[in-house]
Amino acid sequence: MSDAMQEQVVDIARQAREAWRVLAQTSTARKNDALRAMAQHLRAKRAAILEANGRDVQAARGALLSAAMIDRLTLSEQRLQEMVDSVEAVIALPDPVGEVLRSWRRPNGLEIRKVRVPLGVVGIIYESRPNVTSECASLCLKSGNAVILRGGSEAQGSNQAIAQALQTALREAGLPAAAISMLPTADRAAVDALLQLDQYVDVIIPRGGETLIRKITETSRIPVIKHAKGVCHVYVDQAADLSMAEAIAVNAKCQRPGTCNAMETLLVHQEVAAIFLPNVLKALRQARVEVRGDAATRAIAPEVKPATEEDWGTEYLDLILAIRVVPSLDAAVAHIARYGSSHSDAIVTADTQAAERFVQAVDSAAVYVNASTRFTDGFQFGLGAEIGISTDRLHARGPMGLEELTTYKYIVHGQGQLRQ
Image 1 (cartoon, one colour):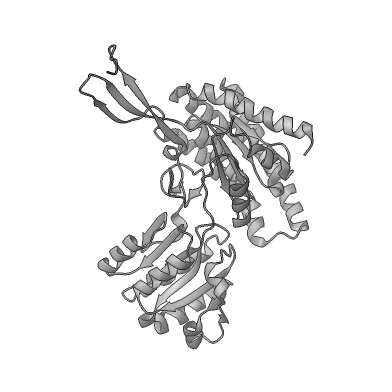
Image 2 (cartoon, helix red, strand yellow):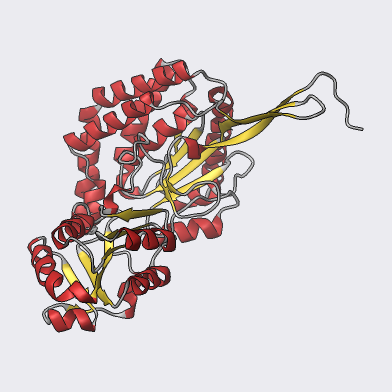
């Protein structure tokens, strides 16, 4: 990496740090005014954003990127409106900054409060989806954090167009434009440089494939909040409403297969497999899903391709599904424990005791009873948007909204107390 690029990355991080000091003291009303301006400028720059995205999509097709990747990259009028709606939804959310989590008085008279404060400067490294740019920027702004964004090279034009609209809005609102920064180059060396700047950046949040996340985790000197991958399961219990189970399975796999909360493995209790599998396989074939199954599945449906050991732990992000027939709920839980990624897993059952056993035993960020895994999403959870979905255990887990972008500090009031 050239010295000029290194200096540019350092300068971006330094300015973001300075912008954070302003944001951390900015009132809720002023932050909301800036968010309104961001939504307005996204609308006003709609044509420029869609034009830039069209060029990115054309280049992606020329580079023979997968259909799932192109789907995540593509913006439409509807998706752009959803970006605006997401920013406006954040305005309506309560500001977590300054919330008193706990307060108490010590025998010596000290008054102690535990208060939410912003994390600081957040670096977000992501792939494909340009809507991440506005979602993350709006959440970071509302929670008083500066953000440094670095999208994938395939979405460079789209992300720059969106970031320019957001920075214009910040200036209009009287806030530093560096509060929403974007690395201006697709060169991966710039990311490597950013990951070393722990004096300016407080946390890194990667959003993308397993390879990207592993590389960032191994390289970064800055703490990383991550999800490794989304190997999500739906387990159809022997007490399931099979019509409901079919609808949930098809939705979890097909509604948008290129997302981390899409089902990758369907587990079916052996007592209902012979009845359930022919119907669900017909629906999956109509949706053009390639199915790979274990021996028990193929005994019922010989046309299904044989699944390999590798299939059980694969995040396909595509219209591919692995199916396994299991002898019990405990076997389903054991499969999820071995092959899952602690992201999102579901049980379909009318047995409340079985449901309770499943939710207690499955150690995932989101566990569902009789619902699709596709709901693991900040907007769907009522968080306004999400900064990412964490499968870590420390600080944040599941869809990360405003609260997960804060830490806390202790504020202590005394009247001259001295420690003896």
